[in-house]
Image 1: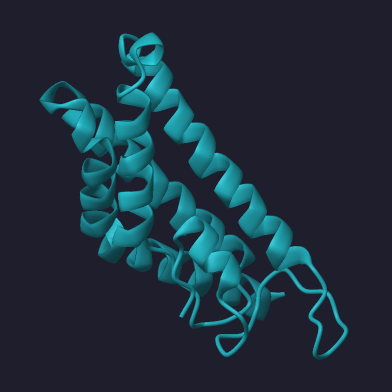
Image 2: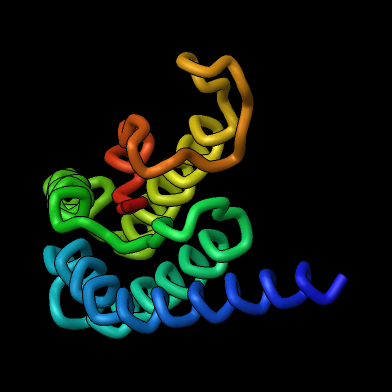
Length: 151
């Protein structure tokens, strides 16, 4: 019983440290994503980066089965989301409702995270077993969908 508590405590501490380390890049990625909306949305972007980092780090700490699992955003996915924001701003019927654009970005990130979870719960083709997380040497396709680095 004590060893399980010790392992959980170690996983939570590792998740907290990883979250703190990833915090600047998460905020920078969210600022990049919301940059097309202008300076009025800097606070919204920073809050989104903070929340995403904390939630992502917490989930990674809870479900990780490897000591190599970490979570951080990538600039390429932020650029894709920034392109989505710019494309929505280019449409006159949507451009006036910036909160709709922010909500659309949140929904895209949420759906990407759900896809990440579904891919992670899928069967491992090579070994034929199901598992919630992969070893570091396995395919990183789900990571590129959501922008999470799991190495």
